[in-house]
Image (cartoon, rainbow, N blue to C red; front, side):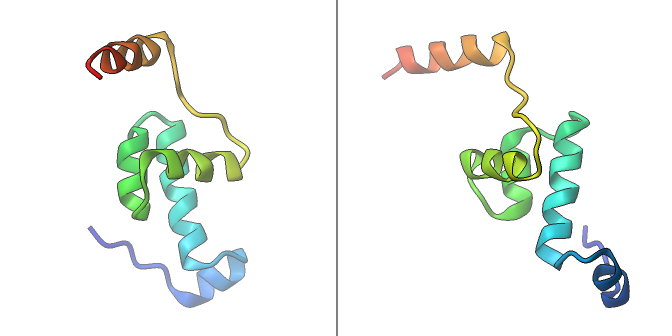
Length: 78
């Protein structure tokens, strides 16, 4: 899917196209409609890089106890 953002709207908002795409990805992430991997895919970034973008806009990363347990299990495989 491509989203068309007319130049005049982007200029009026004061954001670049990249920033508007970041804002959309972070908003979807905060609404728990996408995860960090998907947010990164939207921006062409890794999950960790996407978490930096989330932080850039003043939000925290969604990371709960289930995520921690999954990470621990993943580390056991190494």
